[in-house]
Image 1 (tube, rainbow over the protein chains, first blue to last red):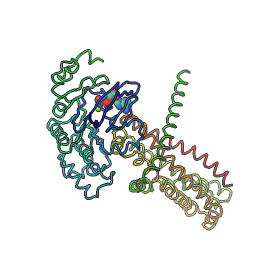
Image 2: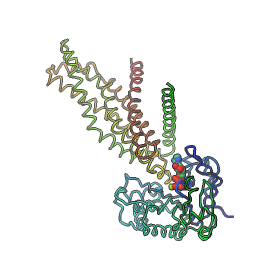
Image 3: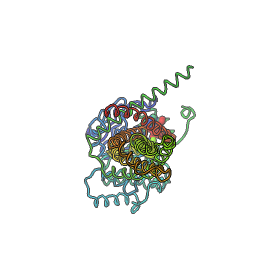
Image 4: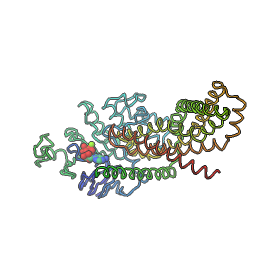
Amino acid sequence: MDVMMISLRNIHKTLNGQKILQGINLEIAEGETFVIIGRSGCGKSVTLRHMLGLMMPDQGEVLFEGKDLMGLSEIELIPIRQKIGMLFQNGALFDSMNVGENVAFPLREEGRLSEKEIEFAVEEALEMVNLGGQQAKMPAELSGGMKKRVSLARAAVRKPKLLLFDEPTSGLDPVVSDSINKLILNLDKTLNITNVVVTHDMRSACEIGDRIAFLYHGKVHFLGTPEEIKSSQDPIVFRFVNGISDASVAME
Amino acid sequence: MFDFFQIVGRNFFRFLRHCGQYTLLLIDILRSLRHFPIRWNLVSQQILFMGVNSLPVVILTGSCIGAVFASQIHLKFSELGMGSGVGPVVAYAMCRELGPIICGLMIAARVGASISTELGSMKTSEQVDALRSMAVYPTDYLVVPRLIALLASMPLLVSFSIFFGITAGYIIAVPVLGVEPAYYINNTLRFTGAKDVGVGLIKSVIFGFVICTICCERGLNCGHGAQGVGKATTEAVVSSTIALLVCNFFITFLLNAWMS
Ligand SMILES: Nc1ncnc2c1ncn2[C@@H]1O[C@H](COP(=O)(O)OP(=O)(O)O)[C@@H](O)[C@H]1O
Ligand SMILES: [Mg+2]
C-alpha cells in the first residue's frame, strides 16, 4: 500500500471528562475526497482538529505523509501546517482585516511571492468562489455564505496538499451549497488536492465523497462508498441516511 | 462554614492555575523571540493605538491629579508660610508615584481591556486556531508585538503624565493661588531631579510589562462565548491593576533601598 496522505490510528480523546473519540481509525489516500459524517456533537470537528495538530490525542497516532504529529511542538508543526489548509465551521475570518487581506494572509506569511503576484493570486482565489473584486469588504459586512466562501478562498489560496472543510455547506441555501460542492470537486480535479469534508448533510456527502466515514459514539461505525452507505442495512446508518429519529437513540 | 472553605479553596486553585498559565505565557514569549523575527509593522500599528491614541487620556488625568494635588498641598503649606514648597512636593510625587500610577491605571483600563477583549474574541471565534492552521505562531503574532509596543509606549506616556501634572500644579499654585514664581521654580529644581524622573520611567516599563502580559494571558485563555470574553476582560483589568499596585510597592521599596 502506498503512503497515505493522512492516517488516524486508534485516536482517543477526552474533553472535559467526556470521552469524545474512542478509537478512531481512518486512512485517507492522496487525491481522494473523503467525507466524515455523523450526528452533530459526535466529534467530527474534534477529529478534524487532530489532523492539523490543533488538538493532540490522549492516545493513538496521527500520521501526515507517514510522519507522526504526536509530540511535535507548535513550532515543529509549522512546516506541516504549511501544506494543509482548513476551512473553519464559522469561517474564522480575521475581523480586523478586509477580505483581500484575509485571503492574502497565508501568502504574505509564506513570503515567497511578490506583492504583485499576491494581488493576482487573491483575485484568482476570490473569482474561484464567485467573489471577484470584493477585496475591500470587511468580514462584518458579509453574509454567512459569503464568509464561508472567503474562508474557502483563504484556505485554498496557498494550493495546499490537503484541505480540511468543517461543515462547508451548513446553514447555506441549496444553491450556494451546490456551488460549494462543485468547488470542492473542482479543487480535487484541477489541483489534485486531497479533501477531507466534515458534514451532516447526506446529499452533499454522496455528491462529493469518494468514500464516506460515519462516526458514531466516538468510533468509525461505517466506512464505504456513497452507494454502499445508501444501501446499508445497518439500522443506525439507515436511520441517519434517511433522517429518521429513534426514541431510544435520541434519548441517549 | 464548609462553604466558606470550599469557596476559598476553589479560588485559591483558580489563582494557582492562572499563575501556571501566566508562567507558560512568559516562557512562550521567550521561545517566540528566539525563533521568529519581530514583526515591526505590527509593533508600529500597536504603538499608534496603545501609545499615541492614549495620550489625550493620560495628559488629562495627569493634569487633573497634578492640579488637585497642588491645591491640597498649598492649603496646608501656606498655613506654614511655605507656599513655594508646593513645587517640589508636587514634582516629587508626580515623578515617583502619581505619574506612573495614574498613567498605569489608565492604560490598564484602556489598553489592557482592549487587549483581553480582542484576544478573547479571537479565541472564541476560532481566529487564533485559524492563525495556527496557517502556520503562524499565535504568541509571535499576537502577544510579542503588543508587548514591545507597550514597553516602548509607557515611558513616553508616563513622561507626558509627569510633565503635564507638574505644569498643572504650577498653574494652580502660581497664577491661581499666588505663590511667588521664582521661589516655586527654584525650589522645584533644587529638590527634584533626574533620579526622580528615572524612578518614574523604570516603573512605567515594569507596569507596561505587567499590564500587557496579564491581559494577553486572560484573553488567550478566555472561556466560551460572549460571557467568557466579558469575564476574561473583567479579570484582566482587575488582576492587572492589583498586580500593578502590589508591584509598585515592591519596586518603590527596592529602588529606595538601592538608591539611598
Ligand atoms: N475545546 C473543547 N473543550 C471541551 N469540549 C469540547 C471542545 N471542543 C468540542 N468539545 C465537545 O466535544 C463534543 C464534540 O464536538 P464537535 O467535534 O464540535 O462536534 P461536531 O461533530 O458537531 O463537530 C461536543 O460535546 C463538544 O461539547
Ligand atoms: Mg462541528
